[in-house]
Length: 195
Image 1 (cartoon, one colour):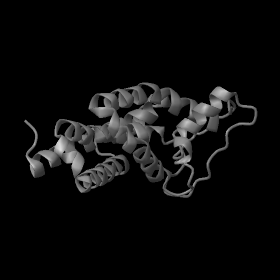
Image 2 (tube, rainbow, N blue to C red):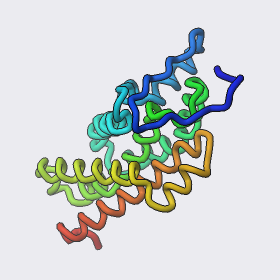
Image 3 (cartoon, rainbow, N blue to C red):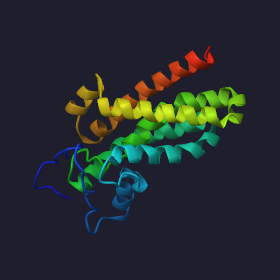
């Protein structure tokens, strides 16, 4: 660990090299580090948040078979443990909110997918329309990345004023909530399915 200097936040507009896992890390810290970097999906030097979000989507797609309540449970667990995973990974890297830490993107994206999972389990006829699923997943991905990058209020305030693992995680959760609202409204507007 890097206890001598305070954690800094890298410039995400530039290519950033993934900070390595410290030599001699415990198996637990190794697991946390790999979860923090999205099982490797956050490793690219450029746009690791976008690549990490794509990794989170790949992990989420098979979870459609868990049903809405199963997926909600996984999402809530990810949100509950995400602050620890992101904070510990940040400590291991010696960098606050390194762009390669993408577990927060996974949790935030999964929040944005909740209306889609609800739709596909409350209205089973959509299960036979894969194009609808692809369009909605694409819309959720774009909406989540939009809010995560643009950071409208209160996301920008949270990003600047909260630190540690919770600070790393919560702005992505808020971006996921905003994206979920957009997806919910899109489903309601275009399909007129919501009560």
